[in-house]
Length: 171
Ligand SMILES: NC(=O)N[C@@H](O)C(=O)O
Ligand code: NI
Image 1 (cartoon, rainbow, N blue to C red):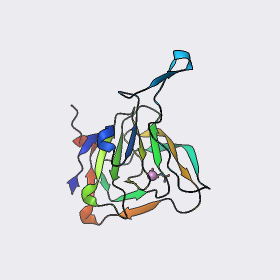
Image 2: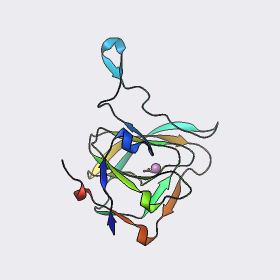
Image 3: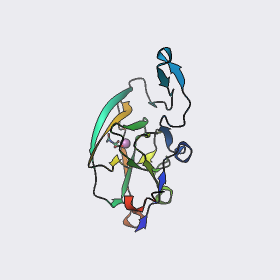
């Protein structure tokens, strides 16, 4: 089985899939009488209809056994979904470009340093949250409303990828 290359998470590399939410190296302006930096509007919450709401949740995730076989991806066709780590722990992101189905050849993996979050654009294929610590908390901002907002795609066995954190080159 092919092993996914795990790339460092950067705004540029992740651009086909959405935005990276981070303070490091980003523009800001001062607010609160100079006591606070505002790293303004790094992403937008995408919804689809007048009855939709942008909601804020906490996901408490537990680690899946690694190395992990990536046999499926999901997408949210009606809205974006953002994950911001709350404990400063690195986590993994596996994505593929939006489209009717994900193409195995286009699956990519990224490693957040734990201070970076991601916002998956509407319809972007992604694996459910993948924490590396035994347990991790994420602030999740996504869309609630009528209709089905979660499509799953299961790859044929020959199209499976192996996700192995040990394969990350620690520079
Ligand atoms: N199902 C759910 O809310 N979680 C997934 O969308 C996910 O990306 O983790
Ligand atoms: Ni999701």
